[in-house]
Image (cartoon, rainbow, N blue to C red; front, side, top):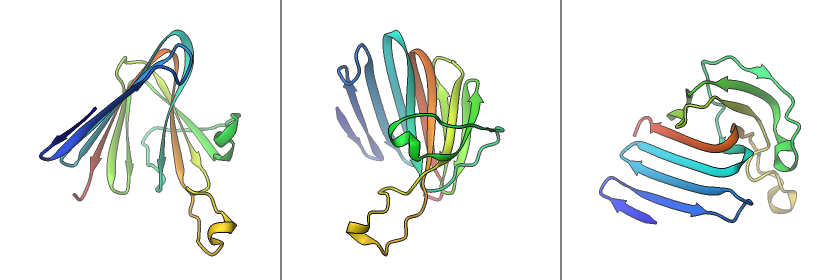
Length: 159
């Protein structure tokens, strides 16, 4: 579904067959200088849910992090200098041009894992070997349980 407004818009999608017994719904809205992203996953079974954001600037947190080793497979293996923060209900972080608030709509604690990875797309010498590839900064919100209900609000600055 997509709705257009005078000062923004709203898009919503759901999928029920990407993972066995997991229903997912995502709703994004833009109103003026604020983006709201509500992402929910529900299942009768317990899962580890990851909500991933990728930044071109390193996010700035007030919360103290502990260094961890991310022992995951696939694209997660590219993430280095990993740290974990345990968040009780919500967190506010800053990047150069936005303030971002991430909150658990269920009030559940969650983990935020951050690190550094090759830029997107990773350097491909067949395409352009002279192009400088800058790092990107993945942020993984991880919740363990039957459900994940997250709300992320981006307040765009200087707009």
